[in-house]
Length: 377
Image (cartoon, rainbow, N blue to C red; front, side):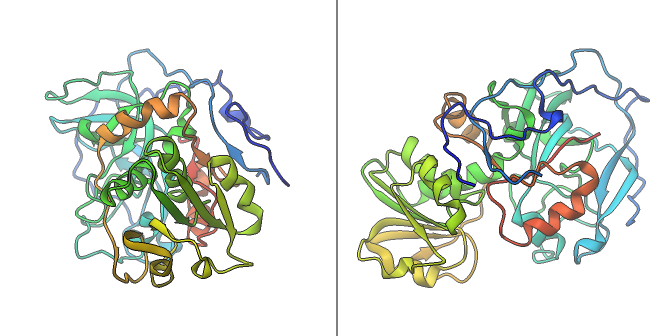
């Protein structure tokens, strides 16, 4: 089905739980305490491009924080079968520079799957692990050194400053997660929690990659995998934030209209043509799919190729994003104006009970935009 997109359109069907009148009550339980108990190792077919919506109200009532919570956990590396739902995981302690977030929505990234598979276990935090990097939720407790955030604030962010180097044991696929203030920003007022949850890691990766190439106004870019979580944001940031003169992007046939709606001047159907055969050359190629060996054939002399995955061929380079709340704060005006739009995969959001299915889906590498988990109990 072809969709015509504009700055105020939300594609139906919109799930009932995304209603702007829906509230997210915070659970009542016993007072907070740190526990040393280890965890047990135990759809729509139409794409939605979100531009604006009423943010769901947060509860302003005082809340007592439980000592245990529901969470998804894995105690061994492996396939999706290692993921277990646990109803008695200890709520993480809050350090001086952290806030405790009542999670409303979380998003899944390829790095979550690679981490679970043990692909960077040498630098990982100890098992067992609650997965999840991206979060959107409500602050319910603040550490003594927190300067700006306060209880009741609606926030979003990538909770792991370094994606591969000691990421948190207590991720976002849980009722609560503890996060450093510097990694968070206030949620854009026009976005709901589902929309916001899908942004942090992808938009920070897109922005940092463009910055590292020295991308600036008047330059051209080719985005490989333009319909994916990172690619869809690279297109928009290149055009709306950095001032690109020309944006080209690749996707399958069904997603070409999406690329155009996001700002691509040239769309390339990779099922019908080879982008590496283009006569046109680009200042930057942003490779989100692992085809650096082909990408270098269409970059101008002196240009750059950002390679997020796969083997790197010079002048390609790889980087691992550093989570930074200041980047989110800088980009919030573009999100609130609708110039940059979150893209949530039409199969989602996945309910909390279907985290295993969400992991299986992200590992197909066929998602459009971001895979979001919501609601979370």
